[in-house]
Length: 175
Image (cartoon, rainbow, N blue to C red):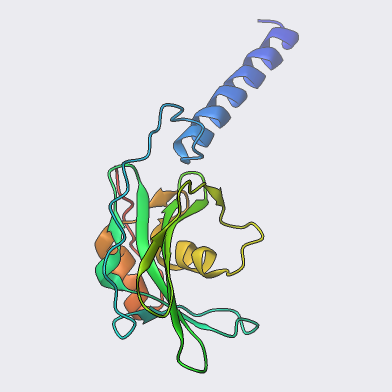
């Protein structure tokens, strides 16, 4: 094998192993036929049950996740209710899903002070790092919902919320 062929072979090998590793990282491009499960209706939630998220200092509302509402779907989407309360005691909530494989969040429904859900007619996936009104989805994804680009097991999500620490031995869901 001459030097040119050897370099071409080495480059091809490097490219193929890089692409394989990238696909295994769960970047979302390796599963082009992914289909989201039909989301269940917004669950009942409790503001008193919500486990707080450690939000940045500039966030004026308290944000928590009601652990009774957290699910990890077969589609890899972590669905949950985030409960927000301000200094006056007003409570609002959002029913959302995080797709760890693509690092995206979707708002399915919102609830105001009455607690009554208003379902969004056409919810869309948005970048969890994007310019969102609140960074709670990003904080929740990084703390509990996702292990890199794979959804954590339900018990790991709840443990992370309770301890405010990502589990050291988090085992990703293989859904």
